[in-house]
Length: 220
Image (cartoon, rainbow, N blue to C red; front, side):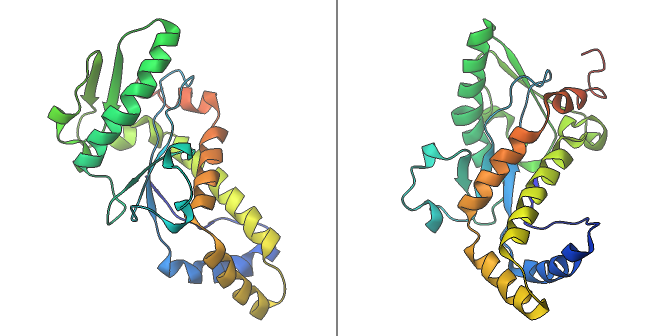
């Protein structure tokens, strides 16, 4: 999923001019890829994975990556690929889910995926007691649970945090606002965004996660 640092819909007039200028400043914006996974009951959500462009972003220079609220990976275009997905599956997903299963005294888990290019190397995503199943081609919009309100809920929360931060720090007439917005973007780091993304993921209600499975598994 792609997240961008931009709000879209506003009702209060004082926001509008600032956000028009914000959209103009978006042209050179860096984007990242976010992986989000949760179980069908909504009781367990896997720690987010963020794919950025840099191996060691400057804002992470003195930070141990394991202490971040997300799993951080890198790729030159900030996109998920089969190699990273395999790494995520074995190093992030399987250990976290195994830990959760042990608490419930369960052994097996099923991972449902779409047929994105990054998921195609099925031979590298095998683990004992884990079964990976692909939803049928061309049905993602209907069956992909994360598309049933989860992603949108997370994006709304992220935008709200960003907008609040912007409005708190940027004020004045149009010229001052334009200057302040430029300074705002320069000061905003990936570290800031990581913490907002984490809060956005935590803000997604359990019932939203559970209801997102209705089309795929209405019996749940």
